[in-house]
Image (cartoon, rainbow, N blue to C red; front, side, top):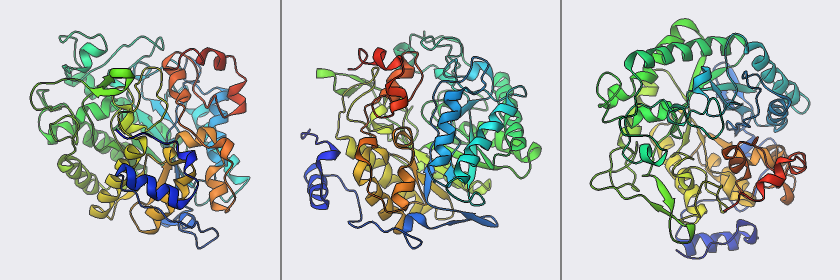
Length: 473
C-alpha cells in the first residue's frame, strides 16, 4: 500500500487530482464551487406535491445519551437541534430508535413506545424550531430510523452483548463469544418484532415524522436477514425469504399507518470480517471456500457483486418505496468500508487501504445504482472523509445526476453548520472539519456518550474526554 496523505495536506485541485491518480482512485470532483440559487447543492428536489429544499441530508447519528427508559436527554436534544441548524433539508431518521427495550444497541439508546412517544415528538419539534431560525420549514423532510440491533444488542450494559441472531455465523459467533449452538430467533419471535416495528411506525406518524427508515444496514437485524442464506424456514435461504421481514413490515405500515412514507438505509455490499494484523493493519479473517455471508459480495470475501442488491432495489420500487440511503458493511467487523477513517476506533484496526479509496468505492457504487434506478431518491454516504474536498465532490455528483442527496454523518457532529456554510459560499472553518479521529465511535464502545471530543468545545471539556485519551490504538 502506498503512503497515505492526510486530506488537509491536499491544498489545491491539482494536489487532490494528482494524489487520486497516484493512489489509483477514481473520484470525480468540480474545481469551482457554485453558490446562490443556481448552485447544484441548493437545488430543490421534487417530493410529492412540494419540494425538499436542497441536496444535503443529515444521516442518523446516535449519541447513546438517552435516559435508561429510552427518553431523550439534554445531550440528545442538543444533537437534534444541531441537525436542525445545519440547513440540510433531508433529515434521514435523526438517529436509530429501538422498537423494543431488548432491541437496543446500548442501554442509553432512544426507545419508541407509547410512554416515550411525546418526548421523541419533542425532538422533532426542537429540530424544526432550530431550522426555522435560519430557513423555511415547508421544504424540510424529517424521518425517524427504526431499528432492532439483532446480533449487536446491548440493552443492559454498554459492553455486554445480549444478541438476538438469525443464524450461527461461523466467524462472527466466535468473534463475539457466542457458541455455534447459541439460540436463534424463532419465526414467532420474528413476527413479534415485525409487529413492534409497525407499532413504532404508527407512533412515529402520530409524532409528525414524514417517513420512517426501516434499517437494513451495518450488521443489525434487518441487514442480517439479507445474509441469512443458511437459515431454514420462511425468513432464510432464498432472497425472497430473506426479504420477507422487510415486506411484512412494509405491509403492516401500509395497513396501519396509511400515508406514512417509508425509506430504507441499505448496506448494498459487505466484506468478510477484518481483524488487526501486522502493526494493527486490518486484514480479512480466513475462511475456507466461498464466503456466502456477505450480502452484495462475490463469494471471495472482499469482492462485490450487486446482483442481489439490484433485485432488492427493484423490489423496493415495486413496493412504492423511493427513499433509499446507500451504505455498506458494518462498523463492528469492517469499519473501513463503512466509515473510512485515518484514525481507527479503539476496537478497530489501522486502515488496510487509503480511506479515500473506501469513500470513493461507496460514492461510485451509489452513482452506478442511481444510473440503474433513476426513479429512486438516493442519498449517498461516505462523504465526511473528503473533508475540505467534500463540497467539490458533492457538487459534482449532484450536478451530474449521480446522486440525489449528499448524506453527512460524522461531519454533523464536528461542524453542524457545514451545509449552511457551503450553501452560503462561505470559506470553511478548517478547525471544525471532521478529521475522522473516531472518538465518536471509541467513546460509546467504552460506555461513554458519543460526540466529537476533539473538535466540539462542548464535548472537549466533558470528563469523558480525559478517559478517551487512554483508549486510542
